[in-house]
Length: 335
Image (cartoon, rainbow, N blue to C red; front, side):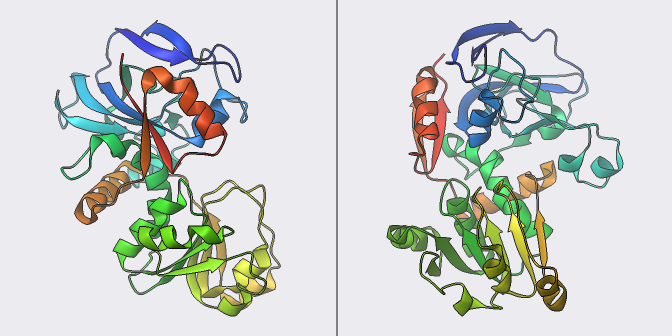
């Protein structure tokens, strides 16, 4: 099978038209005709080989939506023509302890959609049947792609930390991840506080789901919330005054990282005395992704997006690199 795509030949290079042959479909594989593909900061990091795991030529794209074009002989729960999505992971072993326990995203043999594979900046993509997730009615194909990376990244901590509707949760950073977190948490029933260094984001943060807004540039603002939050979800990738954030946690509160901050530092005593914890999580399992999609459909939660034709992929990538999207970019296939 010949696939048309956009690929970079070297680190940081421009994405150019590229074709490759995927060969015959495997028994447990699914071919997806891509209609939309979101762009994520991880695509930029992989393009630039920031993590030193990129293979070239490199085809980005792991927020994929499309219709099933073909299924392998052992695929029985999916059908040709069905609208589906694919996120960061395209395969896991399905037999290790983590997979059998339902934590496929923690499989030591899990393969990323764009790690040593070609991704969704293309007319088609192939993946293992376990990671191809049907998109329910009520979730639009145009905006569904970012849910498969950014959406599940902020939804999974709600599940993993057993967040209750009565909990008080803070979200640090109102960007590509944070704006979706506000919507999920509000619909979950939580009391939601948006943390931002940009005071001009207050009105929009409240519109996205926040009950309260905390300008972290205000001296002492965090200290006034000492012992208040059951979880603080950090979606930014910068260092913060960690002691102040930990101090704002209620007993048994959790400081949960989904933004790749360089490091987190804390004295141990505040953690012990309040039984507080610091943690993080990577995306989510196929079952959790499906649950997230159903929840998004039920509560009409969708990311804020802007679209580009896939032929303008380099313009879109430049806008992401400049930090100008509001808040996610989605490519529409125009091959």
